[in-house]
Amino acid sequence: MRSRIFVKLMFVFLLVIGATAITLQLTVHKVWERTLREQIERSLKQKTLMFAYRVEADRQHSLADIAAQEGQAAGARATVIDPTGKVLADSEADPSAMESQARRKEFVSALAGQLGIDERNSQALGVPYLFVAAPVSGGAVRLAYPLAEMEYVPVKEKFWMVPWAPFASWALLIV
Image (cartoon, rainbow, N blue to C red; front, side, top):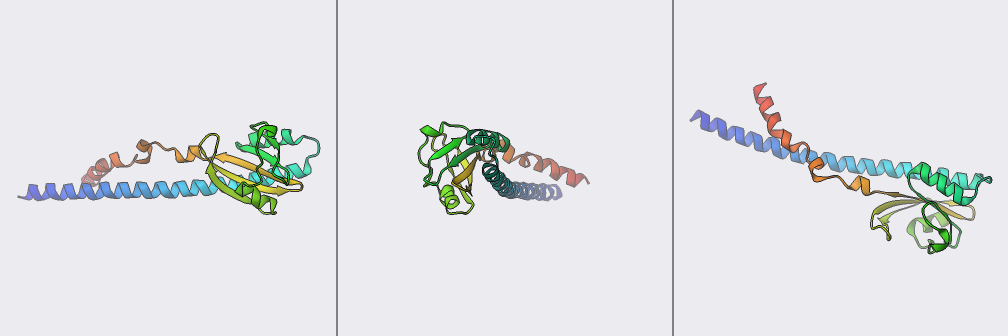
């Protein structure tokens, strides 16, 4: 009789530990993802403002060179446009082949004199990007950072705690 009660209690105990582990893992993952997203956005804002400052101040290099260097330094795609939305320089594409960027949400804000931020899927790649644009005299600059790495976490890595819950339960019982 006692062993049956013990087995039932142990089973319930393991279920509670497992449910707690899953809940904790999901909660921690959401908090981690939100914190990482905020950190990426803050960093990209700073890099975009430094890019804008360099476009304003650097008269020794062409816009194409500045965009290429800043894009590489930021680990992002760098773009410079004029007030009409015409692309003047881009770190990853030929500006003459690009369409007007004036209607892009981040550039609308930047051309109005404010920092512009948007998140959307790239039309060409279908990958989510974070776009941050800043005003400069004679147009605006933008950095585009792919968020695919942040969003892709294999399922087995999301639930790393679940298989260890029964072992943790047994360890607690022994102690």
